[in-house]
Length: 235
Image 1 (cartoon, rainbow, N blue to C red):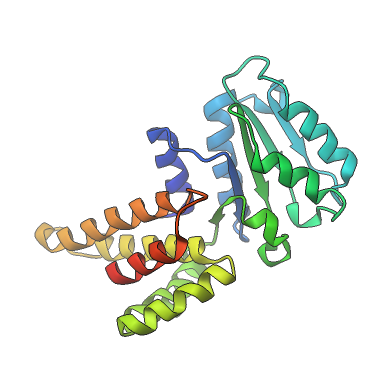
Image 2 (image 1 turned 180 degrees about the vertical axis):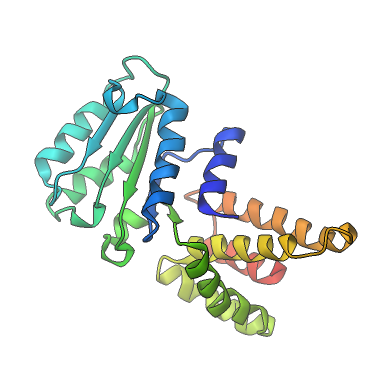
C-alpha cells in the first residue's frame, strides 16, 4: 500500500494524525497527498482559504515560525481544522526549531501540520520524531528498495530480523520500513492469479495486521521495538 493510499484510508476512517513529514523524490505523489488532506478540510480553493497557512521561504527562520505559532494558537476562522504546510523543512534554522517543536508537541485540537522535504536525512531528528513519516517513491524505485530491504529480511531467521529493529528505530526509518513492507505484501496480492482467490487469504490477513501496526506507530507512547518485532514476525 502506497503512502497516498494510507493517507486516503486515514481520512476515510477519521484516523489522521496531527503532524506529517512527507519525504522522497516523487513530487507529484507528495503534492497529491498534500492536496488530499487539505482539500478534505478546506476545499479545492485552499490556497486562498483563511485556515490554510503555508511556509515556503528558505531558510525557515524564527519570524516565519513565530507567525505559524501565532496562527496555530487561534481557533479556525471557517473550517473545522487549520492546515499548515511547511515546505523544505530541512532548511529550518536551529534558532527556529525549538519554537516549532513546542508547537508540534502541543498542536491543539484544530491543527494539522504537514512538513515536506526531498532530503529526509537533513531534517532534524527532533522534528522527525514528532511527525508521522510518509515516504514517496516511484514504483520502480520503491520496488528496488523493497527488494533490497524487506525481501532480504524475509529470508532471515527471526533472531536476525529482531536484531534489525533497534537499528531501524535508531535511524528513524522504522515507519518507512513498515510502509515498504505494506507495499511488498500488496504486490504479492496483486500478482496472485485471480482464479485462485483462496491463495490470497494469508497475504490479506498479513496486510491487515501490518495496517494495524502502522496505526500503532502513530501513538507517541507506543513501544516501537515491540511493534517492529511484530512486523518482523508477520512478514
